[in-house]
Amino acid sequence: MKKISAILMMSLFFLGCKKTQVAMPDSSQWALFRDGAAAPLPYATRQAMEGVYDIAGNDNFGSLAALKWSYVVNGNNDTTYHISGFFGKDIAHFICEGKQLNGQILLSGYWRKMVSTETGIIRFTIDPANGATVLLNPSPVLPTAIILDGLFGNGQDEPKNSITLSHNRPLHNGAAPFNILAHRGGGRNSDLLPVSENSVEMILKTAELGSTGIEIDVRFTKDGIPILYHDNDINLRLTQKSGLVGPIENYTYAQLNAFVRLINGERIPTLRQALSAALYKTPLTFIWLDTKYIGSLERVQALQFEFMELATGLGRPLQIVIGLPAEAQVNMFLELPDYNITPSLCELSLADVERTNSMIWAPRFTEGTQNENVAAIQAQGKKAFVWTLDVPEFIEQFIRDGQFDGILSNFPSCVAYNYYVQQ
Amino acid sequence: MYSSKLLLCVVMLVSFNISTAQQKVKKERLPRRKPSFVLHAGGGMSYYTAGISQTSVAIPGTLNKWSPAATLRLMWYPRYRLRLGIESGIANFYRYNVRDPDGEGKVTLQAVPVLVVWNMQVRPRWNIYAGFGSYFLTSWLDYRGKVRSTDVVLGSNVAVSYTQPINRRVSAAAEIKLMNAFETKDAALTLQLHFVWKVFQWD
Image (tube, rainbow over all chains, first blue to last red; front, side, top):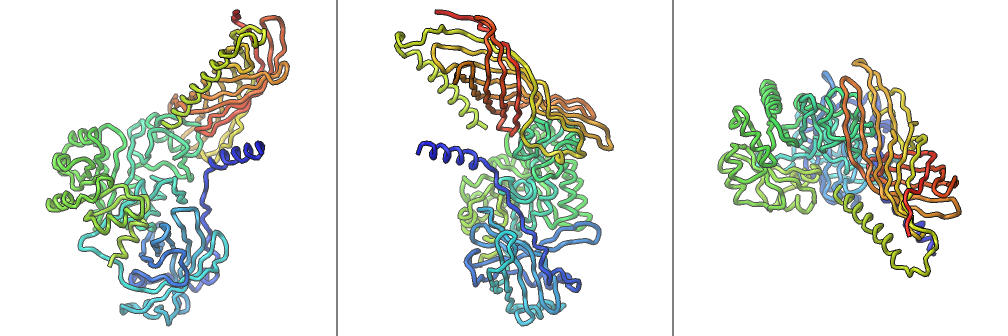
């Protein structure tokens, strides 16, 4: 008995420490979707498909889904469009590409539950009689009945479980744009996304997860290059083994670029690369530069102004703000030339918001909804965001009872669901 | 990280208690051998046994997992079987070279353990060791400038040794040891020859 107990204890010790990976399913095997005659969906069709859908045939994902399109620019004249479905159960979502073939609309992709490692392939078909004919009309006449007949499976299994989505209503659209902000560029490494936190690849993916904006962590290399990196030191939480240890500020950018890879193999991006990706390749409209160091903010401010000017030139709505998380950063910010016209986000008191002339006040969620203070800030023409909300019940509560203009979360898909399904 | 450091403190306190608890045993029941301090010093070779992907660097170069290794250990041999001591030493976990369009570079990851060590003789001349504490890791990088950067991480070791007495005070020992800096998932197996010297004896 003692031996069995010892073996069990040893097993728990070793297995308990084992890191779990999520093997993302390969959804490219659907022959119909790969048919050479399958064509991309036009803009009008994509727009008309967005909405809140009732779920029938399966209780794996809850009773409602919010469907929204996003895009990522892969290169010159090469843009991939994804339709994401945000569910109310287990922070589940699906991400699919769409095509049309013989009057049908086909969606192919994968689903994932963020509360676990469950994932699998998912496919949908919209038959001509179920709305495809109307949706593929150059000017779709809405509302129309849209029914998505779907199948999903577990892991790499052929999808066999049925799910049906029926269009119920348009997505909720408030009087003012609501900011769904993704933490660390889109999500944490601990949530086992297929790309690393604070990477360009994560920034390119985050709109698929429902984000309209991102928070990224800025540090400096030894030679003064602003980069995206969260922790003080090089460690296995963020990077693969490289033989380099100690503070990231000990190394030049060239050294980090040659020797260090993020946990999923990406390079540590410079702030310039990150801003460029967000501006030119994503629909993101907001970037929160969280300053993780104490030092001059001049280089960050210069990049902020440069990219906001570029966005203006493109007619692209993109707001970039410098985050001020503590008194030390506030003091550095106040030393900047033109600090009072530099867009910033202050996490401290309302008095500090006034002192720094920040355009956004961002209190921690543990302070509650603070509707009076939020209203007071909004009365000054400023905005209020809350951070970092990850518990679905709290997200629902803050959207239902609060008046914030945005929520920062590691689960933007959960925020997106709770925001878009509002009646 | 703080919880790890707390764990280290707890283990050190427990180990001290275990050792001092032995003092409470009645003197007439004690073995006849006298308490002593024993110094172990030696060297050999280490081989990095943890996984490392060469694809994690820009251009895979040569990866060398072998390195000379040295150990310095001071043990308190009480009258009882469980002994307590401190151990340090040095070994390179691994080193590698890379070459890219911007030049050549090399990295060495060096480890200096500072561990609390327990030791017990399990058979005549056969000893087992287990240690817990910190590894002082140092990266030596030479690529478009030299960088020396350090970090302190938690780790442990386990070892088995065979000791051959030479005279009353001096012995020679062969030891196989696994160094495990578990916080960074670095581990190396070492094979060493030790000079064992009974520095001080009393009672």
